[in-house]
Length: 591
Image 1 (tube, rainbow, N blue to C red):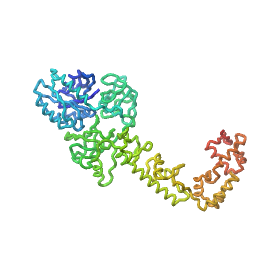
Image 2: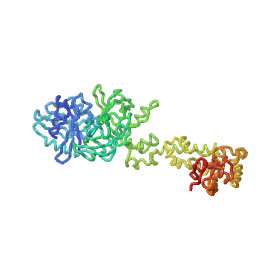
Image 3: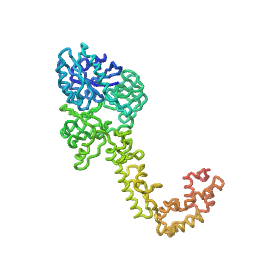
Image 4: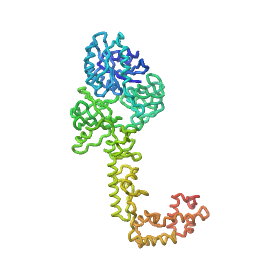
């Protein structure tokens, strides 16, 4: 299916033309029929001679309903611009063309209606010249009379040529469906409609709406039930478990987790300096219309702060509308997650950065500014798929697990980590290593998962939750002699732990014992008991020989030790799962 929108001055015959092409009345509301003009979006469709389906979004031409017109133009790739032969170019013609130009629509067809009332030549010539100066450029033109049928076959053929030249839609990417209508059907619940401009939607899918997950119950396209729908098409979506008041025009159905709704974007304004924009304006995209505050950055670049979050991405085209003057300007989103501007001159510096931006999300730029970003965040900003790992980026960006990392940032983290570890080794010989979390904080690494790569780049060793220099271990200094004496004593009596005064006399205070434990030379049970690392295994040999289950007293006697040692040792064995309590007085060996 293909979808195009109508455009043109009020009462120039847009709806009549669509009705003649499709046999469907696009004006849906009683008020529209009474007043004889389209005030909201109308929809109709037909089958071309080629067999392709073509749907029309009939937009209102009246100046009071300019917001509805923009909602109709926003999601569609092409426009059928209508001018009446007997009236020629008019005010709303210019306003509609300004909107088409602001959106950057490049595919269109000029149709001069009422050719039975006046010579279509003058209207054709003037209108074609005006369209030529817009984003549409040179377009095919047809003169018709919907009343007599004159030129209607030519129009259908021209529409066939128009849609055959439209770019292929993006059907394999993430979904973003801007809602243009919402209503309730008895027995079915809430239904929304829209023009599916990108992605694919299927029955049973889960979609994201205003941050919540909603199920798709059924789909219709052109009033027929379909199991799935792919861009570009008109689609009605029956949503499960959603009240009709919970969704309205301007909302968007999204692929869950694939978009980053934002309330701040940096843009490039077309045809006007940013400091000439009003401080408050309306931003239109898709079917959404949101108030925004502007902050000029310099030249034609500005920062927009939106009144509510929208799922935007670099490359999106916006219409900026001044509600007072009705002036409209196009804007290209350059950054949907811009940096804060905190320093003097930051706005001008930011404008200089944006001057080279093309509006195409660039992995090197996005990662370079942040140092690192999650792959999922990059995808939310539109940097995903093969382009995200293009060979052009390998010199500046590397992927580490679920992260994209700037090579400059990696080098900076490695440099800080190496310096911190060297300082620890220099000033704390008993503790020449750092904990992984401590090292990560010092080096400002954003995620622990990145630490192995940073340690490798820094030439340091990461093991057992510590980071240190290769070949460098704790230096016990004068405590080494005392430790050897304690070790020798424990080898002969494994469960006769030295008392604290004995340890202090041997030069083994808390810091020295902690260092010895990191070296794997002792096992500390609490603050009072020091044994050799092999003591638990030796204890299990003795405990396994006891009748099961056994008491604390029986264990103490079997190990030839005191209660001071037996209690923490048995608790240690419990934690390791080697022994377990049977009741409050008995344990048994786990076999």
